[in-house]
Image (cartoon, rainbow, N blue to C red; front, top):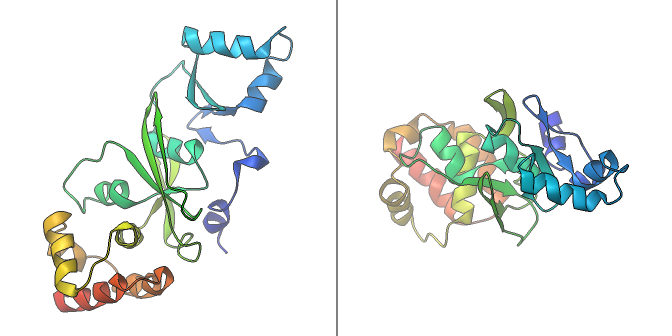
Length: 219
């Protein structure tokens, strides 16, 4: 297992310290420890939030508000994890779909545990994948001085196909890719067919057989 694959399965229960550029997020336990000299640390946290000195990203997770410019992609793994950027966000990042995606979409491997978080900094969507497919073809990228994990173009497309409803034929898949998602045929030709061959069996869905056939036809 690679270092990135191992990181993808780390739970926040181990209190891993994560840096967002030069800014550190703090969980509730860390903040309570820092404020232990106050008569009521919980009341102090409430005052810090109201005064705008810290941002409560979600329950139990806080960021310093001195600089409100954060990479939403790097925040995604903090809001809910383990996870990595995938689906529409990754396809938009690589220029494979024309739409700008405002919400951040990520993959997680907790079965049937799709989650949505509306935070002061943005909206984050998390969709489950089979654990067998989850850790592969993920890499580390950087935005605004902050690192984040993101699926490869091939993995992001496979993840999105897994999330899609039933696709009964190669023709239905072609329409989904080119008409609904507006992925140009030429863009698919630039992707790594060997990566699709490796990834497809991990999802155990018929649509991936159609995908391999379609890619061969359009090559």
